[in-house]
Amino acid sequence: MHFNWTTEFYIFVLAVFVGFQLISKVPSVLHTPLMSATNAIHGIILVGALSLLASGHTEADFWIGLLAVFLATLNVVGGFVVTDRILGMFQKKPSGKE
Image 1 (cartoon, rainbow, N blue to C red):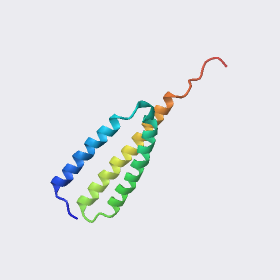
Image 2: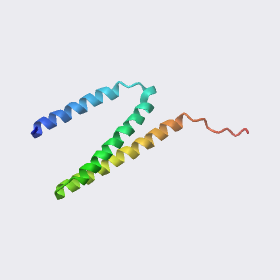
Image 3: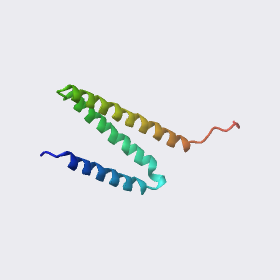
Image 4: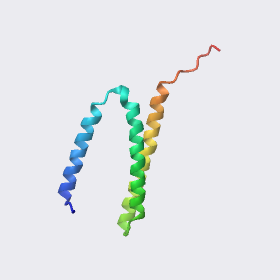
């Protein structure tokens, strides 16, 4: 099955629209579990990017795969940093009375 660029563009725009609508409806109490699930998805995306990099045949495939690995790694690391900061907000601060 071969898609032309307009079909791929429409799919991309639809995915952005649906993703924005879904995320904007999430209550704030569910943001931490959602971030944890997103980190798992980004890990899967990183594995896919690595397989894309390994299966490339041309120089363009290599650079696109390398960019995909870089961006997926940023997503994974950034997701864990944000989750850690959110969880840190719920920890009790040590008091001076001990």
